[in-house]
Length: 566
Image (cartoon, rainbow, N blue to C red; front, side, top):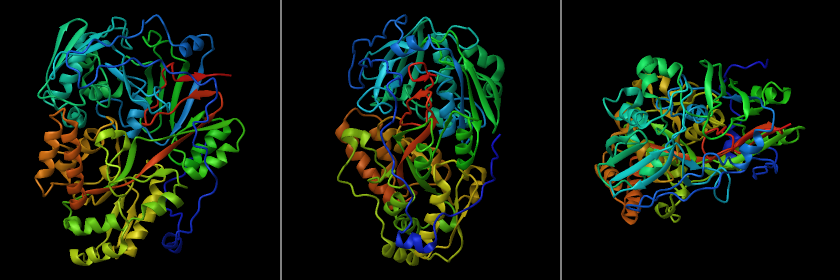
């Protein structure tokens, strides 16, 4: 076994290096996915019904007997175990409770959606956007408010029971009726839903309160995982969270909190024969220990590889690196209710005092992407390419610190050790930059969520672009009805929440684009947080692992994306 060091608050920069920008990380990075010709190929995408098509023709699923080429090939290859070293695991396996980076990584292969985003479609495998039938073999829009799904008749849960429309209705009613605290975040994705009904054993109808421009994207994203009504009612919420069953390619065989998760194949999976005999997620918090475990053969794949380790691993025989820009941004969030952070001028100063460009060059070795405020280019017509990058202005920051009346008290920056790639190092560097603008700050290596609310000040966070629309990464994280506004920021300008509600209820993309840009102006003015960068995620694996990473933290281990050869 590999020793797992305890967490230390270490800084890779001196004060002089931070100020002068002298730190340089070694090695160049090959950004291409570096996959071999035997990497599994994607199932061809099927054109989906779009959000703007009323009464569209049903979208059809390819014949379930016609397995993708990669699946057919995989059946001839003897299966072997896949061991994955990860920085952490969720505290339980309820997919609607565990919407974190470490949670969705593992639940993605245990559960399924009605319709699914095909990440393997498009010009860059791993970042495709096409929506394709999955548990639902077709769907159609009846009108601007109504969508009907027709289910496949060969989908089984891990206990052998058949999935029916009643399970689909139960899944969403669990989120939307008498929602417990643990499910509030998942429920927020479906706040536009007014009614769900089973028309018969294989047909489900959703009716929204108003036209929803991203309804199909919601169904195919976080919160859309389907669960079994009968099993859940028998074991209850806690029992299900400890030992869940879904319809995905792998079932839970063993789960030890903070240690390991063992998955075994779901042999009757409708998507094809799973290609691994067993999958083990092993918690190895420190990156040095994960790298050592990979090189020694203790594990076959590791996650969250920082840029400085990439050239080291590339030089190692039998190891390949696969990389992809994430549809995710690292951010900071501020507890605006804390006495030290109530004045928005101090929060603005903290934002202006971060030299993101320097940190991307030095800490990330240019393997992260600057942002034009809280925007992703994937927003398409809702993205403003003319919006300035989030600025660095230390002189203005010092002025704002003085104007805010800041008294020199310590501001604590909370970061969960090892959770975010380079999170510890970024925290130390940012705190040093804040000292340069006159703010006394320190890093506390403890998760924001583990502190009493009144003690929270600054916390590391990330926002994922799971809807390819501001409704996902921005509004469902910072907008009306979110945990953000419930617990640590109440917008001073009521226009912010008005814009959030209005853009959610119209198909007019021009209006939605204007509303989003106006909201960004307010968000930057009130400064409840700030964006840092979009990370490029690196995975290292042994060369027999043929697998394509996605632009999310999902690890898709379905047979069309995983082959263990050799």
